[in-house]
Image 1 (cartoon, rainbow, N blue to C red):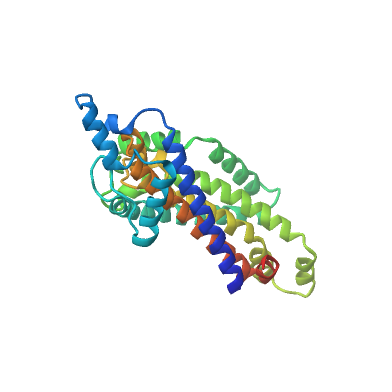
Image 2 (cartoon, one colour):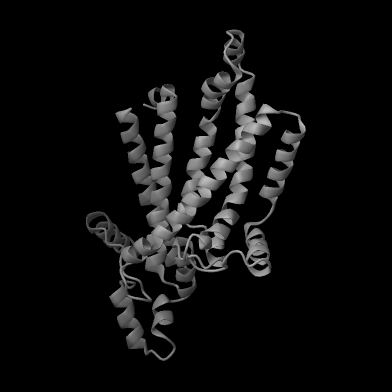
Length: 309
């Protein structure tokens, strides 16, 4: 198990290096001179040249990347914002808590509702409940997130006045963005849980468990659910990584002060140090979650860890 963990951490480190260099290379070919944009129309050529030198933009790409990697790895320094002058790490930390709060609320809602819906549909295959769950999940996967967000605002905030529209104040501010973010995941989790449980439901060892006289509850709990939940764990890991990386559309619509809104604003402002730092943080989150998911697989099914080494 330790060897498997070290192997996954090593591959994660290689992915982070590749992602960070790729972002550097892509931003280097973006049209327009960042120094000219930040200096303003009234700046002289000398002022622009001085700003380019201060930002290190006059250095070759490999040199700039190596300097960034050295500062990030050895000192945790991701540079400074080109707009505000604040350290990028401080900006990311200040927004990370809001994104984590929204992500965990959405994950808890989608996991609870989606798993229960999938279980009910799998237990009553072909019945009215199964058909209703499948119809609702198809609808949930089809509706765009931005449209759902605007609909929730129109109904529950503007018409009924039950919930606030924008910002991050009390718990009531969390309801609408969490629901809008969770609805597609509820549909996805419900369909995946149903499909996985139906695959396991017809296995030989399940029929053997029934033949031994075990109760329906024990068979479902110890045999069907435990073995059918592995693909769901993988999907949840990817989904949580996406949430923590920043739900750009949802955070922008509800003015939620998270990573997604920070990155969108940084792109508009051409604040490339913030963009690079945010993308690197998102990639780090994805890789750590993938490692945790893989270790969970190895724990639930020890064959995974032994085969991977």
